[in-house]
Image: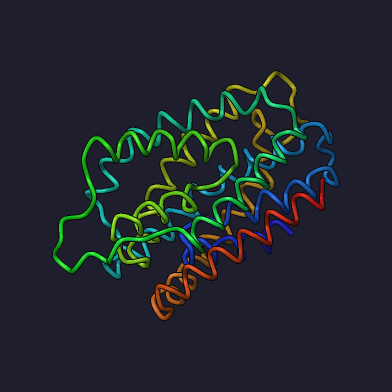
Length: 260
């Protein structure tokens, strides 16, 4: 099951730049109690395990996008310090939030992000050769993106992609850049969930709230699947990517609400 989830997450990482985190959180929140994880810790474990797997998933996606020249590395460099700080602080906050409340936060976030991506105003696409977004403002934005990503268990793509598109970046380059940013978010957030968790939070095979069989199984398959999503992203139009992105988040948000 975890390998199957990893394959789906990998394709979504390459296609949408989200590391598959949203679908992973919804699926793991349902699966982990079947594996012996206490129901009251299931959402925290789903978030933590999703973020841990995203480190490798996002890295594989970013590598594939880099080969096609669609990662804006100057933008990544400005955002990473904020992403690391925000991921650590956000995970520290999340472990103090009730499991049921976390479920509603994640579901609500999915629906809001979908609405923004589908109906939000966007600036004209930047022409080739235009300097990529950079500066202190990107670092500040990275802190907020990292913190919220840690709370909802994602690689930040559903915020990074709309932000970069709003700044005039081509959707496929926004996806590639988001994938690279997801590595920093996943690393800092997973470390926070592992170290901020109370002792004995989960049964065996866990480090803090990170359930290792889920994190490792998902990551192993997602690394192999991510390049296929990247290829698909380069064949789809920017408007099609926006619609797929928005529709996907609506479905995940509804599934979380129904599952709660």
